[in-house]
Length: 297
Image (tube, rainbow, N blue to C red):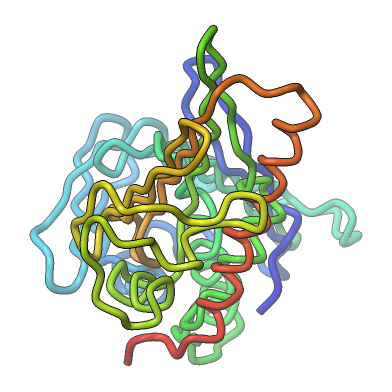
């Protein structure tokens, strides 16, 4: 499954906005039914969705094995526009005739489906994109009269493709008069214990020992462990006067969220860029290694 040319931006309030668009060889009213009728949404959405397409009416969501979640319809203009909240998220669906398909009658013309997903977890965007890509593929299959494929992004490859497409692999630099800190936040595709096992090669660790090489780079070899809480946290000191901290926190359903910080005395700009590149390379190597690790059954 390949990613599409979907986009990630921020709105005027600083919230993240994921935009997806798909051409469908079906009229808008048929797609509208698949967006609003529970029997149809259950075939392609990750949750059971119970809604009435009227502004201010409640929406109920139920994911398998979880308590029901709620939302509210923000806008409903059948069969062209539907918006609602899902917890803290906003989903805005739009439909328009696909004039490129050549049909003149809007009621029977194939349509273009748009989804605008507004949320706060910017670094989780690749998970949302991969999830919606899978859902919209299933929606197209349902509309085509086929059995939907719910295999999704089982190995995480689609997620990793969206990391690159949406520009989510970068780092930031906080500079002060006496130190600078390079920070990377990266959603991973395996749980924390599997990431930890790969970084440590299964070796038990203790404070005061040298951290395994997997926690360092060529330019920054791992030093003495100063803080340790397996499989969530490792910090080590390195010379001169620096520290590197790895944290594996809860992330999206794809896996753990890596927070990596590397602090050191001020450096010339070329050295900062080189250090950023080295840590970027190390994290992307880790992400690639995780793809080669069998996904949990």
